[in-house]
Picture 1: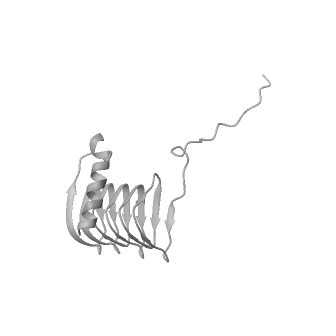
Picture 2: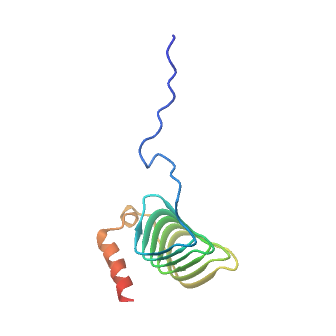
Picture 3: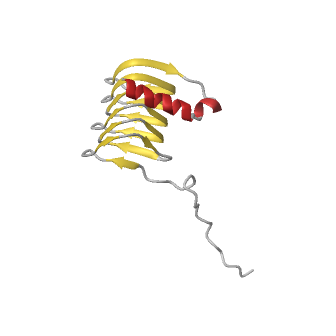
Length: 143
């Protein structure tokens, strides 16, 4: 009858908590690969492959490399493979490369030079293997 009301426990695992995005600021030039369990907000320049849950490339942002993500929003420049469940290309986007997607939206004014490939949602495709990451790395070294 006189029990103390305890507030609900706060989630402790990173998957349950809402994490702020990792920001690459406009004055940053990064050379190397990025692997993140969270989201990225890119306003600088990245030369390398990226694997993350979600990514937003701002108007001044540029990526030269392959991107594998659940969701991608492109306002800036991307040169390389994009593999994502949801791809959004805005009017200021400039993309050169292959775009593999389940859903795709492109605003008027977006520049795209490449190919579009629709993918199916399967468990095997969702989990990228180490061998596929090695292949992506080797492709970057060859070109």
